[in-house]
Image (cartoon, rainbow, N blue to C red; front, side, top):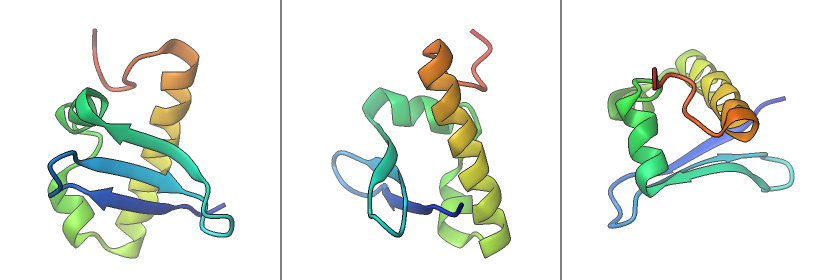
Length: 82
């Protein structure tokens, strides 16, 4: 299954969403501290979201799905060593 990545990073309240394209349902959403933690972890960078190839975006999509699953299961960032 493929998802769309919607990123509004230049807004006063930046937001990153993973969206199911057929239904438009938001599968995951990161804002505020959760979004900062996502970028601080190195899982996602501004550069790869801005200039990514379709292949690279697919890898980011998979990483975001894993992150979402980890947050749901254990309540913390997948790549945070704490």
